[in-house]
Length: 538
View 1 (cartoon, rainbow, N blue to C red):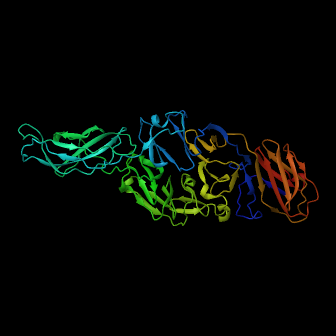
View 2: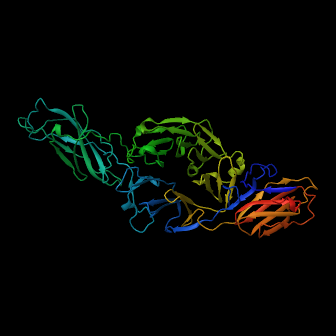
View 3: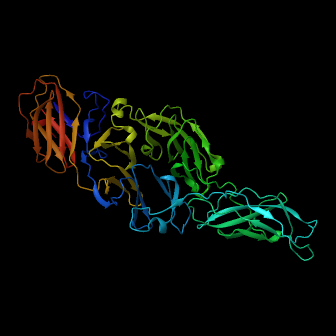
């Protein structure tokens, strides 16, 4: 009789140790099982140190080129920050946007990286507000009687930032008659326009744009003036007016918006309370109220997956699809699976994963299911404190950190636990590296030496008298490997294996029933065998 294990699998804590599949584990700690062998996970490697002036829990690598050089942006544990780079092609300002630190914010390379840190050094509020008052209009004191060609005219004003971002218009002015001052026309056709003052808040606004509408037409550009300009004399000919007002619905984002996420076609998404928001394509400062979608329950978090935008709420999950922000469609999934942690939501490609009350929830297409149902009971899952999870997609697996440790999971496979903790992290796509926060230090996942792993088999039930095991062998790619053999919960042997050769087991245990094999080490192991005679060993 022989016990042989050559395809190591992860834990399935939901099952009794006797009912586990042949290669599944009671304990799988600090192991990488992708190849079927027992390969040690490597520990974290040192990468950088953050300024000790904050207690960081949010991390972002602000790379300014393709050489991997850049700056660490970090925020304290009191924030839940989401960051996206500018969707604008060849953005000369290298703009970056984020939510979760109070009102939505934006910065540029020059502003964000000034000084010695911590970064970002400075920012301004995302979005351009409308003027608080309408412009006022008056006729010249020396105006003559209006000609028959005089037109009823009204004006609006918009604010424009240093970076060309234009906000929504003011309320319109009162109607006033005006006409072109051309040869043969009465004098005084121009209009005096008193402009609204500068807005409150930090928006880096530098200019005002003046638009006028004539006899029910379209508002067209008259002039652009500095922010300090208080009044303007409009004597612009009707035929010389500029472009139509483009920013009628360019509302700034809601001050409470969070969860900033980048979608295809230059669209950004975010949410506040039960409301999902979308920006104008390639205009991250413009968030029309007309693009908002409401949900029955408050939103926990969102993630862009191949099926659309996954919206995790305090009720059922939703999928939102569409190519343009004005034509998004909502689909509620028939699963009572609220999310419990916004930072647990991960785009896995064809599906999304997030932490719920019952386990990890997978959403793909029109379905949502608890994919840890066959691995963990609800009680075992709750013991991992799912509300504390922050997770990442790494090497095709779901890598989750919780208050006390971390685990890796892939639907359809077991779960492996690792002796690593982190306060936050950031996956750098450019470098294919997962960075983690440990205190004020930044470390790299699997950037250090091999950790010591522990793997323990299921309980193999052998009829008493049949298990006269006399010898064993461990095939590994390096030694030593410690093998422990247990019978009915009692230690039979603890042996430091030094080679692939056979070694003897102590006698006197043949009448025991329950047998377990445990391996510990930091070298990759291909197989372990326990047999009643040397001839059975391969």
